[in-house]
Image (cartoon, rainbow, N blue to C red; front, side):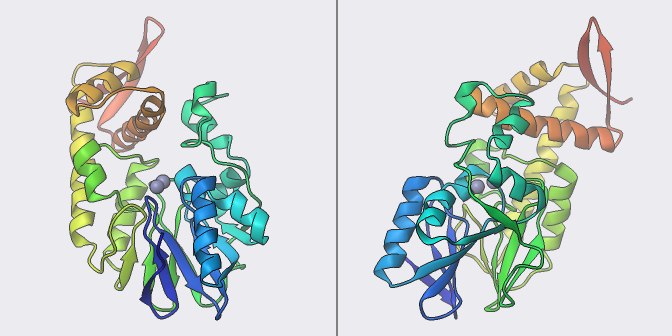
Length: 290
Ligand SMILES: [Zn+2]
Ligand SMILES: [Zn+2]
């Protein structure tokens, strides 16, 4: 792990999930997200320790386990205050909510793994509790109430507001919770100017290409689901056809992650009056509106 200066007091640690670091004075820092797991949290602490830096605060962009995995060990060892927003805050405090929301009820035990269920940490609401040099703003769509952080050096930490080029080319379907909000967030991102740290992408000062790639892929997936529904289908069949179409391999994590993403697309198509649903033989069918 390496601490890299972006500008002024703003740094980051390149990682599977990039970690933001903001120096509030010579020896104290705020972190933006804490990586995948306890091990990652320990590595962050070791690196900062070697540089004589102490973590006094952590901001989580959202509640996904790959962004909050180091929270607990860092909070236990430094007593850092953790800040997050609204629904995300609740999920970080009660991480069992994450697999519960994805599965829809008490999750199968295989879903309480570290990818879907991080360790709990104590969190306070970010609204009214953030230092002046840092600002937060809403980036909903990927998850309920995701936020981004702007530092006074004009560096923006955008969490998972944009899926990475690699994720889109390799897996094509990326997780999201609300399609219309995701698309609105893409439009909002076009208005920002500065340096951008996206959690799973290289540092950049130009978001335009990635915004277009995200948008086009979403519209393509929505149109493919609509095509599948030209003949009425159950959710299970839609899911199966999407996995076949995009050459994806089904497993328990993918079943709930992509499954819940496809449900978000169905809601989006329903809101836009492109599809409807009905029940036949006690099964739910989705069908394209004619
Ligand atoms: Zn995420
Ligand atoms: Zn992520």
